[in-house]
Amino acid sequence: MLQFGEKQPDHEYRDRPTAFGLVERGGKLACVRIDRGEGPYFDLPGGALDGDETEQQALAREFVEETGLTITPAERIAEASQYFVKTTGEAINNLAGFWTASVVKEDPAAKSEPDHTLVWIDPNEAAASLRHEAHAWAVLVWIRSQPSGPGNS
Image 1 (tube, helix red, strand yellow):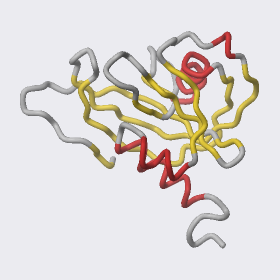
Image 2 (spheres, rainbow, N blue to C red):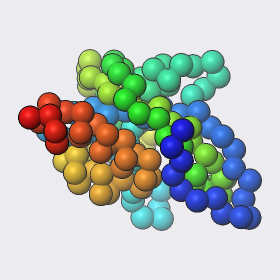
Image 3 (cartoon, rainbow, N blue to C red):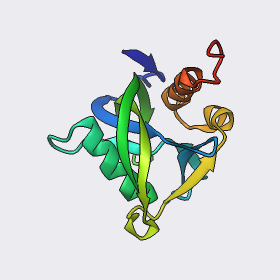
C-alpha cells in the first residue's frame, strides 16, 4: 500500500482501517471543512471503520454524520496509508480505501458532527487544499479516471 506522511520518532502509530469518499456534483467534489479551534482544514468525507463494518458501511455512516448526505458507495478506486497525529495527540496510520459514491438524499438535520461543514470544491482546488497527502493523491487518481481527464479524450 502506498504510504504518505512521516513517522515522528517520539510517537507510536496505531493502524486504523478507514474509508473516504469522492462524490461529484456539478463538477465539484464533496469535502468537509473541519474547524476545531486551531484553524480550519479540509478532508474528504469518511473515517474509521467501527467494529465489523465494511468500508462501504463505514463510508455511508460517516457521510451522514459529517455531511447529512446519504450516499451509495460505487467503486473502490484507490488505497493508501497516511501517518498523522490527531488533534488529541494520538498517532494514527490511516489505512484508507477511497471510494466513488453517489448521493441518494440530502438531510442536513441528520448531520451529527457540528465541527464538520459540507463544502463543494473544484477537484483541482481540493487536491491542493486537502489536509492529508493521501486524500489529495486519491483526488488526482479520480480526476485521471474521468472521461475528460488526461489521456481519456
